[in-house]
Length: 376
Image 1 (cartoon, rainbow, N blue to C red):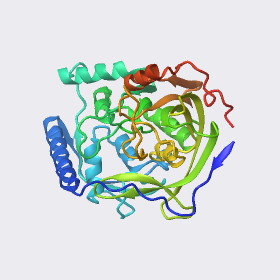
Image 2 (image 1 turned 180 degrees about the horizontal axis):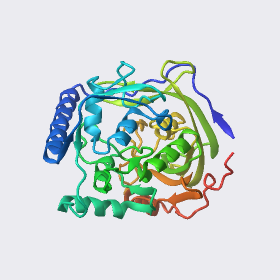
Image 3 (image 1 turned 45 degrees about the vertical axis):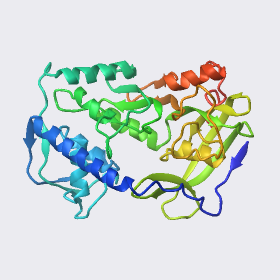
Image 4 (image 1 turned 135 degrees about the vertical axis):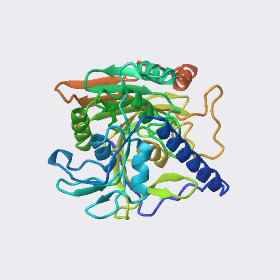
């Protein structure tokens, strides 16, 4: 099995977009902030005072944003981001980022908060009932502890600049009588479709997050890529680093030892090829870095079709009838259930990928070498 190693030198970063986007993005961020504040103002609010709490052993290594969500169920995502960004929340007297992890025994100073009061049973508005139905329509698996959604392409998982509808916000309609809402366990890119794991209880969130952290979760992705990788099965091992600008953020291949670089490993296998111009590839990420699969496939010169960030092949034309959208599906997730047993869920091809499979004559039930490969 061929191994692709990281280069000694940095790969060239993707050319940055036009500077005119700076003003647009700033305006989008301001509009989103105003919309978020307006939404919070309309909902019934509960206020708290400044308080200092200690991180318990059960909360050890919990992310700052997850810690706040667990302690204060009625706290909105946008409010969490604001108090962290402004430095109003302090850990042992220092500023932190929402993604930083807390250690048991640390002191967390929490500023006054505005919490959304839990709604009475049956008090959903028409818009909230539609949101609840949309979530049910996406559901691939559900029990008392766990929910697996079939996230459609184009729907963001969490909020960001210019994003007013996302899965995390939709989950607000599932708050229980104690004010607890389902928690995201992992992420998918906005244009990636497929299996998205959600914990319905704090107990499940702790166990599922632990499974991801210790790589007990098995994830399989399907993609349509340019060209046919050789060899047809292999392992991609590189270091990845984030390249940020005011216009965009991309992940690039980095050198070993470079500041901010993280090791990333992906296994791939060609399931079926189409006229040596396109290939259906099955992917198994061992690590879970941002844009890992997209950056890795571009690195071996077989970028994923429809990828707006990493598809840079010159003079390459999309075959007729195929939509210029990201052809990446979180096909399957297998993970230990918090209460015992195993969760094993498969997502169907999204409409634009199913159309491509049909046009190219690819057989969706074909044997997948990655899905049937041994765990080691």
